[in-house]
Image (tube, rainbow, N blue to C red; front, side, top):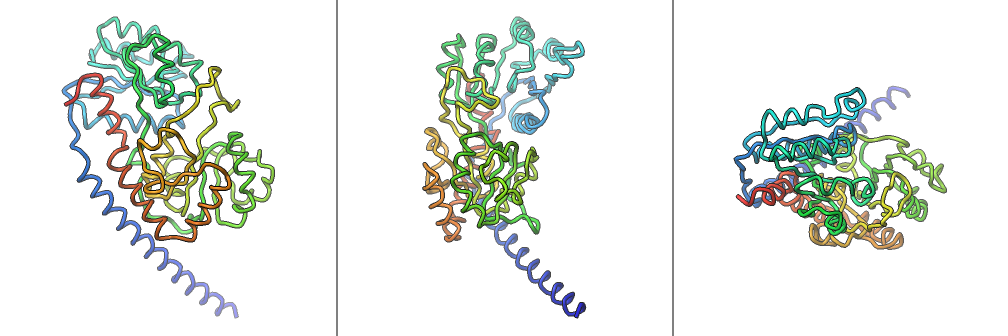
Amino acid sequence: MSFINSAHARERGLADGNQLGHANGVRMGQCEAIMQKAARDRAPSPVWDVRVLFVTSGKGYPYEPLDLAVINGLRPIVRELIIGNCDKDLIRIGNPKANVETLAARYRPDVMIVLEGMNLSLDVVDRVRHMGIRTAIWLTDDPYYTDLTASCARHYDYLFTLEVNCVQFYQEMGCQQVHYLPLAFQPEMFRPKPVPNGVNRDICFIGSAYWNRVSVFNQITPFLASKRIIISGIWWERLKKYRLLAPQIQLNTWMPPDQTATFYNGAKIVINMHRAFDDQSYNHNSRRITGASPNPRTFEISGCGAFQLTDIRDDLVNFYTPDYDIVTYASPEEMLHKMNHYLNHEEERKQIAMRGLYRTMRDHTYTNRLITMLSIIFGPR
């Protein structure tokens, strides 16, 4: 009897493996064709004959992937790239500049680009500017940290914000050159890839349980409980019926990019839900500046070739076409309706996901964004 069961299990395992391998192969072939077309249709990357000093956030995970994305985006489009680290630990032990000022004095870059900048002394920025070196900062957490970032506006020659509604705010703070530049996705981290056995899900959400998200998920919990799902992030015990979903929740984890991309690839539907501008958790937005711009998750999900169901942001239409290469919802009821529809219309779902992949690979890489930044600072090439 045990031999029969073992043989049956082996046969079933082989059949499941063959099915998974075939599905992975077909999908990867489709994605590869889309990515090659996007590469052909993408405008050639210009190269600036400049030396750039890039100062990382120095904040560790989850900012490290952003640091790396900018580094990889800059390398192919500048003559020389120098990397400085703004490290919080070094600030504590008496080396507050992490050699940023020394690097600027030694190499005399044409521009110093700072990511996020919370750990870099503004006195250092002022002294670098006094050397005649242009300075730029790319703010990554607007509008949620505007109470803290307002002070830096006048200390940089160029300020780039990922939130369109913050442009006027920084102009009013005294910065003469303020530009809207959303984040993007890094193909080396977020891209189509084969899905390991056991990763496939109907629905995926990866992110923190801010209260606006909890409110929506409370309303869709019964539907989610009937599906194969993965939810990962902090604070999800806030759900009213947490125990109902607990077996499918990875609680209080910060999922690294490679694993995040794996789950995006393995999900039929990936939910994107932006953080509320007035949430009290880790929020420094006393002016209550609303959010209109898409978060980086928007580009990362579509960059994996995954079907994305996202809440509506006013500026989203400048990046994707709703119901063509991305799907939006305006209420929990509409969200439920669309999840049910697209779970039952596989071909339609896959076509939208492939169109989202094409748009993302063509238009929304970090190299695309940094070309825009350098065109503003140095003029187009």
